[in-house]
Length: 137
Image (spheres, helix red, strand yellow):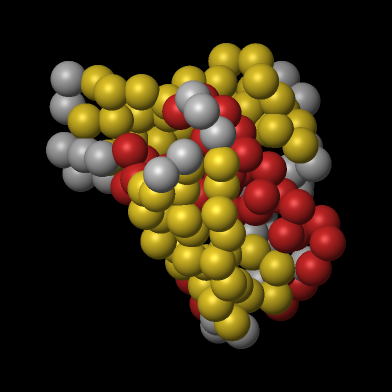
């Protein structure tokens, strides 16, 4: 199984689905899917690297917290990750982001405002891992 992601139209919202052989690769794909839903990051120059510790007991809560972290960084600093590395740590995740200026990237859709808990999923499949998350736009 190779990793991938896609945006799925959803009434007044955005739905991102991602999949990969491992949980961490699936979460990396989810970050890419989220970012690519509203900007084209292909020409984005990383300005700096930043690290986040995401803590949660359940996988679905990790997914929600991770997506919230990306939205928070967009809202507070106008930055988006153009690359990310997700690693498991005790009690959660460590995420190393390559951050770029979101205002310098071509817009391709509405920016996300918040993560919703409706239909949130992250789990194993027969072929690896997959997740789904809905965001208010």
